[in-house]
Length: 484
Image 1 (cartoon, one colour):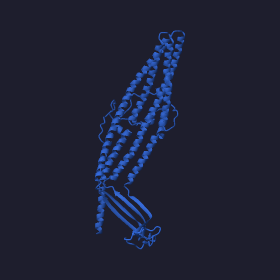
Image 2 (cartoon, rainbow, N blue to C red):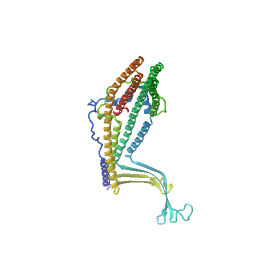
Image 3 (cartoon, one colour):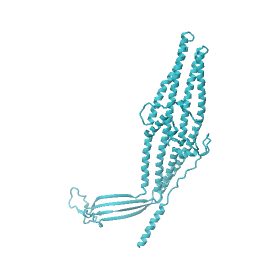
Image 4 (tube, helix red, strand yellow):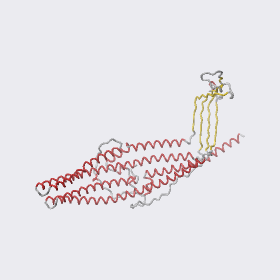
């Protein structure tokens, strides 16, 4: 008989371990993505080095810019929040791993008093109440029983259908998501700092242009006043020349306001209070490359944090399908408890007489909750489909962003060349107009027109230069650069 029980127990344990090899749901497989071999407008057809592989402190060479970025990575509040999210997800991951271990509960020095009714049996340890008084039980109770116990209980759910493993898989994906979210925040932060700094350089350059044109207009105004005094021109010439000068003058306070606001914005991104920002270079000192290595679209799956985060979301959703499916099947739980107990305090440590123990195993199969569990399973599958769609859309958006950035870099280079020619032509026109005006061969209106053209062309050149730098940053971010 003992042999039969032993073999039956071994068979049961072996069967449990065989069942534990089962796992609900399908393992994750990356869905098909309609990626092309190259980006539109790019000649790269094989995997190659992309600018996304360049660390941000090597990609940006301006010393002040790198200091701002470094300060933002450490002090920015969004970055600090992302780090806390990583810690929270880490705790959840640890909990999912601990689910494989038995749960242990201990009760030390517990005392249990029970009041028994008249129709219940008594025992030598029962206390009799003969009269009513303070603390007496109700009339239908006439005795009480005490029990003193200390025990340890163990409860262990066998992972028959892989529910716990799928939960761990989901928790791991969510944990890794927080890392990708932090990378995505850093990538956006690096780009925002760089674009803000380049915008600051542009405002500096525009302020310099406005101040230089103001001096030029003032010089022209003095000449017109002398001609008015000599009776060569009327007061209308002075008024129109002053009006042109005020156009340049009005730009100065507006640009100074924009500079202060941009400095404050940069300081806010670095987690610091408003103050001025030192510039270690000028906008026109920068020289742009004709093209940048963009690699191939497939590399976005590795370099773009948002793409990786979207895929991890899909992984987690895929694992949750298995979890929801496993809940529809029986669960096997083994519970064991043991310790010491006694009716009388003096017998508490009467060992082995006071020892007790027990083991219970049970299979729980949901019956009437079947529709609810089925609904949860179907919803989990639909959530997985949604996550797949979101992943595919994120990849497509990333390819479009890179393609648009490549077009911007190429066309802004062409615009910059034209803008430089326009500035050179406008400056030559101002020079010739002034010479002709002084010799009486040109009117003050021609001088004003030439100066206005020069002002606008120089401001446009500065703007195109800033757009070039921002296009470089946009391409770097679109390719997934900035988190390394």
